[in-house]
Image (tube, rainbow over all chains, first blue to last red; front, top):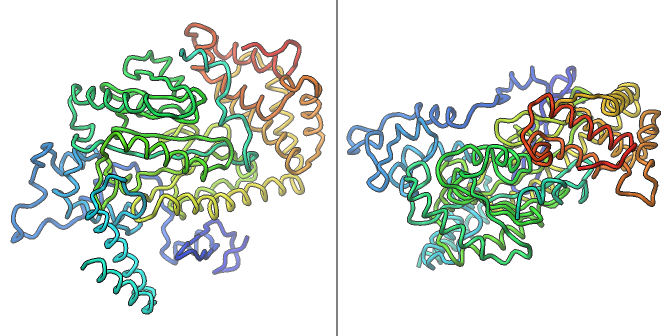
Length: 165
Length: 380
């Protein structure tokens, strides 16, 4: 298969994008990929990846009170330093305590997504199920605005308003 | 239930059956879960780990799975037994050689296993032969529901099921398939597959999971994104986009071999036959590598009607046992059986005692020779 950009070299890089159920494909050679700024990722051990992601974060604003960098979890005694070394968290509570520092990393690891979508435990209290539903709707709303589907966005906004009553 | 009860045969999801089985060997779905009110394992003392273990073990052993279940204490198991469990994909390397109290609950037919105290408190998985991801998903969801009736999972509305590593957050689902891609390898196009997989945010691993090499042209691919995508969307991406695409690649490479490079194909198959039928010492790595070429030959005949001199010769091996004696004729199931039963821990467990590498190589060669030459029925 020939590269779709230069039409000379063999296409060795194949991009498949699935957005809203539509699949688009692109077949290009490594040379053109480099020119387009498409990085062919090499395998990086997960904890290295995690700690490099944490490292590039700007330190907390000095005015915003105690920095997450220095805090330890009251529940398990965990600190961000330990996370950098081990790549694993200490307890479920850490997701709240270190939320600011973890958020960019979570976003990066999950292709920009930050909100759960899918199964809910059947025993989840009603209001948190509702909260979940609203969070999901908000995510859809964001996507609709981005793709300029304002009709859908308006519908979603109404739905969110209704749910929040 | 002893491990030797299962060690002399392959598990049912590895018998070469199921949809698209000529390329998709097996399907697996696992869920990562933690119990609410406990720390993650890296912060747990051994006493806490033992408490979690007991709690989960009691719940899992009481589930109605439609099959007998048994429990193995991994921290107390011998090194040989741990290797054996790993070779059968019943536990991970991390679980086999981790620290502290931990165990695994296994359904006797091996379609279900639950690792307790691996990286998360609980990792349950369902495995099936061929491409059967939807069926795996349905079954594991049902099992997860049953467990959840008895235990509260750590869950948060924003982030979903909370896991020790943020990369598993959300659904905690890992969808994976084991693929046999010998033609892509032979035609020098395997890099294409790696690049395509990476571009689709998939992880590619070797035969035994994280950090292992691809043996026998077998690769496992799995999803990496678990947050913001539902379980059913993760599964349908695999079934509707990813798997068809890779199967198409591999089939195109197989056709290319047949039409443009039949000599390369025949050379690989003939060499594999000659070595496997005659070698007196064979390492596990070499055996896996050669058996892969036999598997390719048989599948190309069965699924594409391929008929080259080497494939025809291979077929005469397949027919030796005759139709009346199917059990002894060379089939994909036999190849997979040789494949699994000659792995180091299987070999030693079935032999009854540990063997040094040279003795293992001799025993492996003997088992394979007798299966392929059909002078004596294969003894295991």
